[in-house]
Image (cartoon, rainbow over all chains, first blue to last red; front, side, top):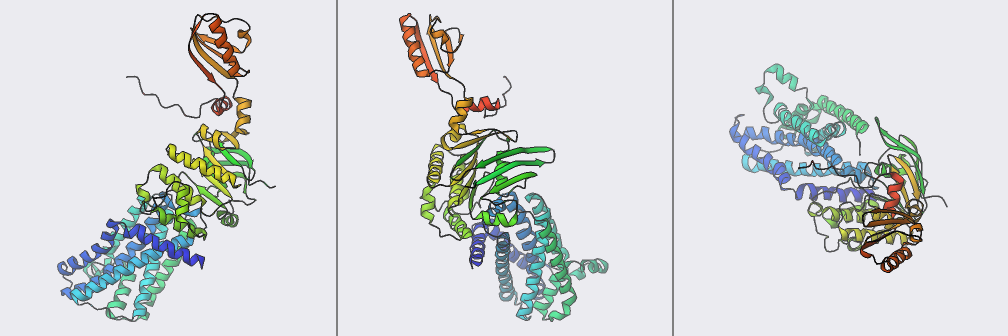
Amino acid sequence: MTTLRMLAVQTRMNFIWYFWRDGEMIFWSLAIPLFFLFVFSYALGYGSTKQTSTFLVPGLIGAQVLSSGFWGVGAQLATFREQKVLRRIYLTPLPPWVFFASLVLYRMTLLAVQAILLVAAGRFVFGVHVIGNPAAVVFILLLGAATFVALGSVIGAVVKTAESANNVASVLTVPLAFLSDAYIPLDRFPPQVAGALRLLPSTQFIDAFRGIAMHGIPLAVFSGWILALGCWTVAATVISARYFRWV
Amino acid sequence: MEAAIDVVDLRKRYGDVVAVAGISFDVQRGTIFGLLGRNGAGKTTTLESCIGLIKPTSGSVRVLGLDPSKRGDLARLRRRFGVQLQATSLPEKAKVRELLEVYAAYYGVKSDVEASAQRVGLEGKLDRFVGKMSGGEKQRLGLALALQHDPEVIFLDEPSAGMDAYGRRVLWAEIDRLRDSGKTVVLTTHYIEEAERLCDEICVVQRGKVIARDTPTALIERFGGGASVTFSARGFRLEAPLSGAGVWTHDGDRWTVVTDREPGLLLAEIVTYANASGSVIDALDLHRPGLEDAFLAITGETIEEPADEEPAA
């Protein structure tokens, strides 16, 4: 009970301290994805504007999943460590996992807000509908979030300084968003390149998410990729738990 | 009764750098204990070994009978100690009120935010953002966060660093209050005045070792040396019996005598003698040995490191 209360208090405070009172953060996390949706929907011709938007809504949500994990959790942990925030927390009875969970919960809440905004904009501006089974959609989103939070935590665990952690996060998030079927359809790449890119967990997650959410494809069709994402999650969790340092 | 803290032959090496080279001490419950030394002497490393932030290379540390380098023991200790460190930071966009509430939640205690803020002179600043506070205010907030859960042992690392006169007064009053309520306090400092004013016991630390340990009074008595009287007097000639009062030195008309006698009485004799012999006193000064003199005698260096000298223009 106390632990749950700690988790709730800390999550709420993360939201207030690191989001609500940070104008830059609000802008980057809410305005930029919408800006991309509008600009790309009109500018990129993947068929009609509606077709383009149908491609982009899950793509942009997927890209936010990557950035939540790599940047929002991974690089943020390295920053907290460097700023000695973790050190102070370590000396209190707050269990370290509660602090970690509160950071993840905060980012997941923000991710939900981002997803709702993108889906709403897609629906009301471009007439795009999410037709997938809600449970399946939520499942694949949560699995993707778990995978990239785990992979992000590896950055937080093995990269020493906040600056390099932020660089690693950016270097992973930005190119992957372009190479993982998020912004640009894979069929625009030469077949061999596309084939290689389809091996990336980011591509598998975004493709599965798009298929399930926008095209109503059953979850079971993606079971191979789901298994692969699960393996990435477990492996990354083991590695980050092994190397993570609170102080 | 078992000591609150017991450190035996603590050593910490970082590669080739020896931060602590075998430190032992114990702190009885209810004592205000000071680790006094220059920056880099090993005070912070010692303190951080007591709270589980640093794993000693060798030696043993017990706090309230528990070993802070062990997970389980540290988990139990965290509720029983309060800590203020130099090297921590609190979220810039957090308000004083929020931090007091959040920290109360960490410990599962009820927060009396107003009272906590008042204790450290932050009443009326509850809605101030951490990022907008001065260094001294942040230190005082750090102190409030260390004390909310009423810990048995309090570790303070350079608690007055960056504080102005007001902050220091607040801090000292708070430590007096902790002493009155029987708490054990371990603090590091490189302010002689603070150590002398606050501590029941002082460990002088130099290059990773304890080189003296006692009450401030005893340290001054043992190491402080004699008191001295310094004066400038025109036409002063040193004669018996005054010449036997201590060790005399002079530079022109400026005389100094270091004495084991009560310096006030000696000063009176000097004035009487000067008046009687027709010499005129221009300046007069009495110096009783303090902890600073003792520190100098013990360590062979002043506590303030000599500033790098500016190249002559």
